[in-house]
Amino acid sequence: MSGPGAAADTGPGTPGTAGAPGSSRGGLLDPRELGHTASPGTGMPDRGLRDPAHSAARPGPGAPGGGGGTGGAGRRRRRRRGDPNAVVPEAEFTSYYGRPVVKPSPWTVDIPIYLFLGGVAGSSALLAEGGARTGRPALRRAGRFSSIGAVVASGYFLVHDLGRPSRFYNMLRIAKPTSPMSVGTWLLTAFSLPAGAAMASEALQMLPGGLTDRIPRLVVRLVHGVAGPAGLAAAVIAPFVATYTAVLLSDTATPAWAEAKRELPAVFAASAIAAGSGLALVTVPLAESGPVRVLAVAGAAVELGAQIPMRASMGISAETLHQGSAGRWHRASEWLTAGGAVLAVVSRRSRFVSALAGIALLGGSMATRLAVFDAGQASAKDPRYTVVPQRERADARAAAARAAPAAPA
Image (tube, rainbow, N blue to C red; front, side):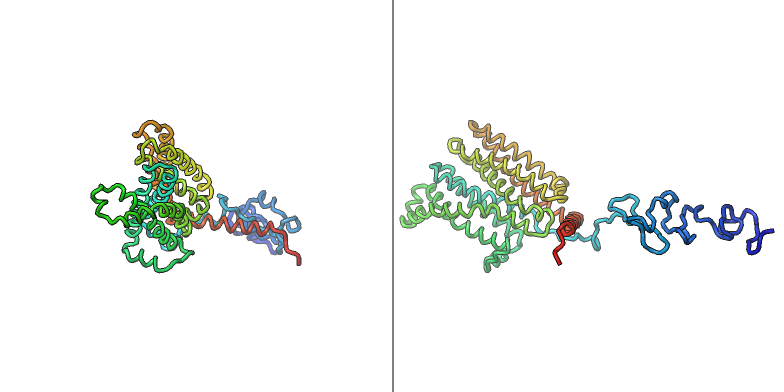
């Protein structure tokens, strides 16, 4: 017979009943059989669901870092992000209703063509003025015709993307210095007028004598007289025309463009020099193309070199330059630009090789614009390229705040 208050022995029973194997208390199952550990002083199982060896290693109430609550239950360790044993799973970068965090720009392929032609127009005007100052009439003529042709074509693609010409005219009604689009519209207009005047002088010189005689001499003298100052004015505005498009892209919230805001103007400027020099290699005879080859090689080298820090500044969004259509355009731009520079070096005695070098440089510059454009669109569609940099900046600010010395009271 058992003592008073003891439960009757029913033999091998079910777990949780009197007489269950290993029961340390009548009617209760020892929590260690379930892998639990009893909290000190309570006899109740710990909710941590840990094995006894793991639980014994946890600091007690009086140990450094131990829990201070009643019963001495240890403080639960914080799980680090990326821990495979973490209770909370890794967050997936999704958005409400499947929409991106940043809305991609509504621009079409007209815009990268517009960016490319703006660079060609600006660099061609610089080369034309250089030809005028160094006594190279063929370079001057080709540069002036190329600059006005490129700026007119770029205006067409811009208006085509806008949808109606009136939208371009409406942007000329006001000048807003804080808007890259407004500034760009005025730059194109201010550049087109002197570039057109300089080109008009070249066109008059190419007319047959019979047609020139029908034009009043005063008009002919006026056109030739303003050609020099007009070409110089166009050359002064040309660097802004070639590079403002980089500011136009980086001023948006598109992750890939915004992260590359420091290096993108340099990339576009060098790419514009390479493209303008490439066009001159196609249109200018070898006798006057010596300085053009030097500029072509320099522009290609700076373009390829500036892309290295640009990709580093882009952070995680630089992945878009190696994926999809942007990746294909980016690889094509590198090969065409490098190949064009090599051909420009060895083309001193061959007009055919010189033309091949120019075509390769033009193709590389166009591919650069397409790669940057497609990379920006891809980064806007994936919320990961928006959320991860935001978290990194927030963590950096929090770390800086913790590291900063406390202000005196």
